[in-house]
Amino acid sequence: MLSAAGATSVHVAEFEATDLGSHQALFEELVVDHGPIDVVVLAFGILGDQELAEQEPGHALEIIETDFVAQVNVLTIISNLLRAQGSGQIVVFSSIAGERVRRANYVYGSAKAGLDGFATGLGDALRGTGVELLVVRPGFVIGRMTQGMTPVPLFSSTPAQVAEAVVKALDARKDQVWIPPLLSVAALVTHLIPRTLWRRMPR
Image: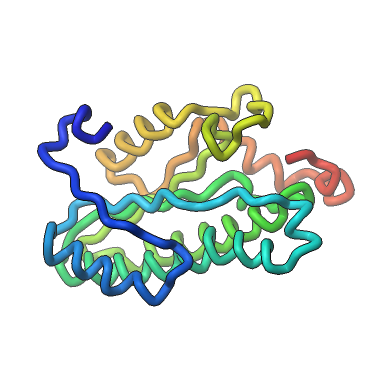
């Protein structure tokens, strides 16, 4: 896919998100072998099973560790490496699920809420360093993670649409982007809904 898009060469390195101790050496090696780095895209995570997470603490922790803890670890390492080289862009995938956490998927939503807050704060801390951070907040993305689920009208997108919006946001040097754009309005509306109604909202 990358070659078809015009990449002159593609190098693959194995990565285990939850093996936190391996991250530092891995990314340092990538910088030595292939640096300097222009753009880093964090594109890993799991949706998990909400019902299982409510019964099995281990699964709840698996979701939190993958979607928040591991991301924090990688972001801290990558931001330091890019800060040292004085340039670079970082793309972090948040979610509308983290804007106001719902009862229907509160484990995943809370992980995304934490990631969004961390990434936003990190982006502010990187101001003036030559390193930029883009927080991407998509709605329902039609793909492997959401297979079997019903897309939400007006607020859904395809991976290709997400990719196109991210590239445009990077070129425009934005620090955040909602996909689709209408989702930003919906996010504001969610905070106006009384909690008695909000807790009944579906996934």
